Image: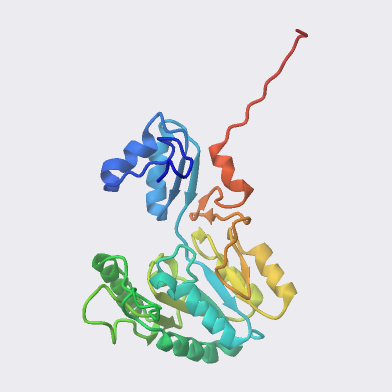
Length: 291
């Protein structure tokens, strides 16, 4: 198949195995000139350690705890539908999932009500059914890890307004949309990348407060805002430290736009012209005499 696509033998290889068995071999091997890695921030740190032995260039696209700001002038119906897609798509198992919703105090409770309504309408079931919007999670073990975070959120004092542990299919690693309100920035569920269909809703006083809360994270992969005020939107885009920023439509990507993170979300870029940089070397050739 690869030959039919015009790729010479050895250009594209798939190696399957446990990371503990093949990870360091691939990232640390002297004959591998560069590494592009997508995964958790913890795994990214291990890749950096392994690759450091041969001082090879890296591209790391790592974890996220991405904020989506909902301002008081937003279209709440559209914003709620967009936020639900942004966090519950692929059961929240997406690096840019908008797992923190920063909602203006003037529309806080109405927005939560609309978000719950959207979540209630989402169909959970067989991924082979075209009507299904949320299939099972990647494994029972990961589902159980996310459930532990839900209990932790309850223990920390967040208000569970929709419990995704209820009303699920009898068989399979299912977990439904889960919504926490009254979340504080210092809570574990607001700081850790849960990587599941769990969203934290935080109340903010105004745009400056929202920007401060948005940046109060170790991550910087995605961020966004819903507002009718383009000046407020652009102010947020400039001040929030994230590799991607979406205005009135969270999560879209385009091949020509570079994709990557700030802070512990990694460095380097996929997509766009910038994606080639990690795979290229620049050489200067100086000719000092006439032939």
